[in-house]
Image (cartoon, rainbow, N blue to C red; front, side):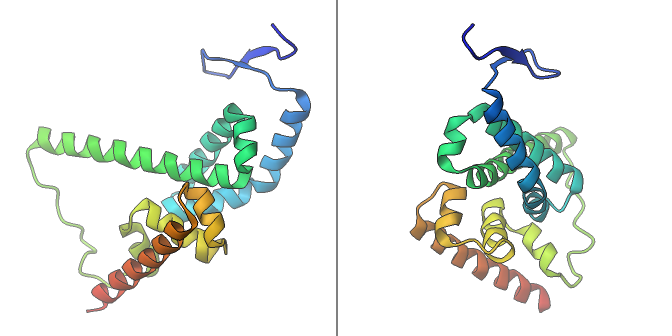
Length: 180
């Protein structure tokens, strides 16, 4: 083996090259400084403490595995993009599982008992798609620019600006719909 020693992650059969200790040190310091902000971002998207914590930890593992590629894109943007992508993948997987379960049970799910009640902003956000929630969280909670949102979502700056506008419009529509 080269100067990079190999090691395995606990619970994983995968052998990963060990990056130089200074890279691990920098990544650890960055994670320590950024973890709470990443957690809050993930929590805004999920509204679930455990899910948010899991997303942040998985994102950190992916950043570690990406190595220089993550640093080239910028660790904060790469981390947020990874969190959004992990959440989307998980939601897709659960959606497929739900559809299969519904087919197996051949029964209709009961309607949401709170559907007729007044909705608040948090509930309206949860009714929106993950990309829309991510746009709104990045813009209004984290105060990110169109350029930064574009970097996180992996889209052009113009597309980010338009997506934020559409997400804001959808949120307003959901809020006014429920007020009627």
